[in-house]
Image 1 (cartoon, one colour):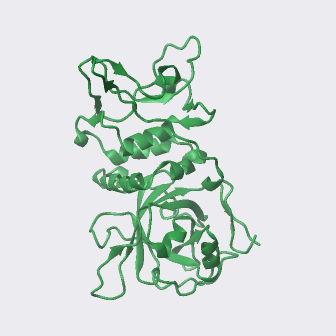
Image 2 (image 1 turned 30 degrees about the vertical axis):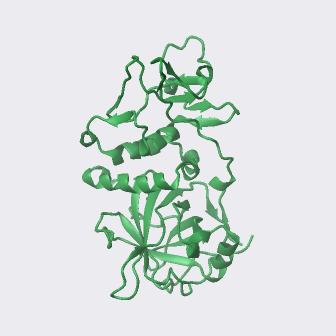
Image 3 (image 1 turned 90 degrees about the vertical axis):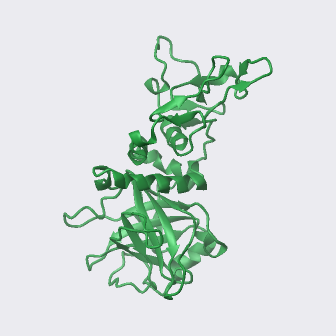
Length: 338
């Protein structure tokens, strides 16, 4: 393994992709006003209540209602409860793989079926609920969010994270200890990341890794590390370093954020790099054109970012560099020094 490489023992790319079951099965009207569940067949279904906050289920003329259904086997004998959560936190798919209910709840919340209509959206804080649901997912399984959330849901997570600033208690919470820990030396942090799409010049970095570390000058820095063949070349000769700054607002939209990654020209005031890291050099375009990624905390160990190419010229109109970026902390990753 070459210098500066990482040993990501919990890399989400190495995990088998688990097909998620249907999140919601809709009762449908037939000409004779009878309701049927189209797919999967009733024998393969187990129903449970949705945990979507403040939701009501719409009813039909035949007395049935739209229901949420997931695959599942028979209940253990002697079980009198109606909730799958009281038995185990997952459902077994027909192919034998597991679909975890806490992850499915996050997907359902970000993209609720039409039957889950909030009675009063102002009666709860959406960001607080999302934070709790992410916290329900064990650290070793959070990487699955990278494969479970499609680009539209990643963008939706950024929007919901914006409501976190309406809650004085929630806004004090942090997904990372790096910026809040002031007790001596702070260990580096590692993340697996995925964008919701981007233009061809940066398509090679749609899936990448990120490390955050403290410099000897007391500032906090980070580095993006791509995984493709093109990115591996860039990792060595054009490393993408950035400085973590305490910006609290997206310049182009005036929306709130928690902090930002400023790439500058790449020649950062970084006197000492972590062992095995290449020295900073001038960034390639477009990262050399005043790129800033604004970050919001959305849950324990999970961040979402919005990248902007703000430009060096005074008359340049800022534009989004790519879609929103989901970042999930890898608690098992370490730097491999060679």
